[in-house]
Each structure stands twice: as C-alpha cells, then as structure tokens.
Amino acid sequence: GTTFAGGVDNAGTLFQLTPSGSGWTESVLRTFITDGTQPYATPISDAAGNLYGGTTAGERTNNAVVYELSPYYGGWTYSILYTFVGSYDGGPAAPLMMDAAGNLYGTAKGINDPYGSVFKLTPSNGRWIYTELHHFLRGSDGGNPYSNVVMDAQGNLYGTASDGGSSANCPGGCGVVWEITP
Image 1 (cartoon, rainbow, N blue to C red):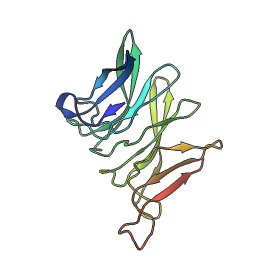
Image 2 (cartoon, one colour):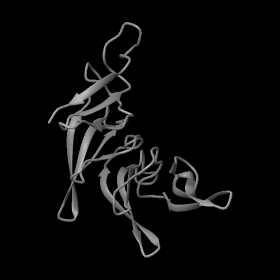
Image 3 (cartoon, one colour):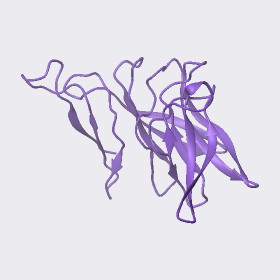
Image 4 (cartoon, rainbow, N blue to C red):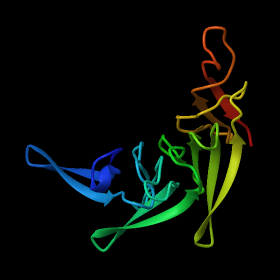
C-alpha cells in the first residue's frame, strides 16, 4: 500500500504488510522524497513481482511520476518510467492498469494540465514510451479524472472524470463516464 503523507518530509511511503503471528509486520519499501511524492493509489504488480504506481506530485521537483519498484537481492530498486513535467498535484491519483502485453494505462488528474488526461506507457528497448490517449477539456468530455482505467475484451478503455458533462444541478458539470475505443 501507500501513504499520501508520512515518511521523510511527509512526502509519502510505499509499504508492505506481512502476516506475523497473530498480527502484521510493516516494512517500508520506499520513502518518497524528491523523485515523485504523495502517492495516492496502491501500486499494481506484474508476474515478476515488480510494482508499478504513480505519484500526484514531486515535492522538490514539482513533477509527478509513474514509477516501478523491482525486487533486487532482498531489497528494492526504484525507477522512474515517466515524468509529468510541471505537473505539481496533477499526476495519477488512481491505480494503473496493465494489459497482457505489459502496457500501462492510467489517468493524470491534471491540476496544471489543466484538466487531465488518459495515457498509455509502452515498454520499448528498456525505455517507456508515453502516449496521450485523451486530453480532457472539461466540457462534454469531462475533466479531472481521479479514476482508474478499465479495459474490456475488445480493448476499449473506460473510466470517470469528476468534472464536465452537463447538468443544471452542478456548476461546471457533475462529471462523466468516458470510453476510448482503439
């Protein structure tokens, strides 16, 4: 799991709980300090035990990130897969999603974006290639997505955005459910 705050500089942690006797033992796997801070969502894992997640900010750099934490000789190695430059408080606030090919999908909530996006990260020759799948305009398409991405068997992506849409009851709209088709 993650903590949004706590740890060094109150910038968040990534932790593991392990059953121990009649309770649990906590281990801090990562203390976020400079390279991405304030992780909102629990990371996801792949078959090799690597963890993938995002941060909503970057305390000293102002850059939110998508990261990978890989097991390495009894410890963990932290790698940044993508940096949302100039995105203070605008990174992923929901868990990422990984498809069968190992691509990562997510939403960036978009405080400085200004209204957020849906993105895909594709592994390629030891790097990750960022593709913006949709840039929200906070109109009928919505804005400020705080949701995770869900994929159906045909590869269609779904999620929600907290702003936009149309309603007489909500200034700026009440939000939308969106779909992106391949």
